[in-house]
Length: 179
Image (cartoon, rainbow, N blue to C red; front, side, top):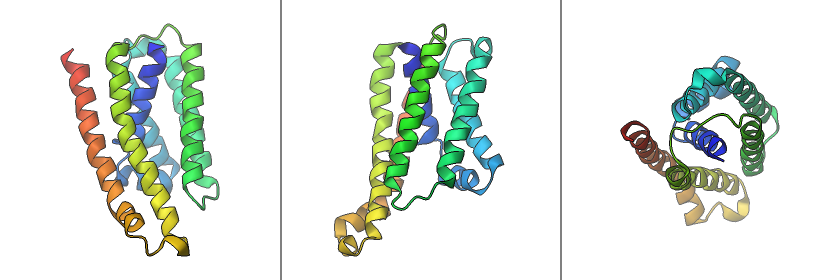
């Protein structure tokens, strides 16, 4: 269980707070940008597991699978965007479950009682990002173009997601390096 929690926490951190606008633009511009995004995932995972060098197989498979999932998502038609967002996250979640079941010897740096609240905290920027994607989809719909709440969400939720993500990232880093 702790392996899965560490993998999921690392994924949430790398896919939301660490995937800045600049990283996202790099990711969609080229395979090299996508590889950089994957390296952020691997680095974040390495910080949350004990003896990462002893689990190179996990890191190779994690990197390849993450690259393939994101590469596929970037090439699929996406109008509206929110279903692709959810399917992408579901594919990553399933891959993390399978990796954790395969690599049971991996030990997390943080205890489960600490990782679970941190995961819940890092889910906040993920949910805000999903709502931002949904609001942008709704703005394309004539029915919602005049909606003040949809316009507000489209303008503000990305920034709010990134700000809450950085707070979550700092808390995880504090827990990782102070305990």
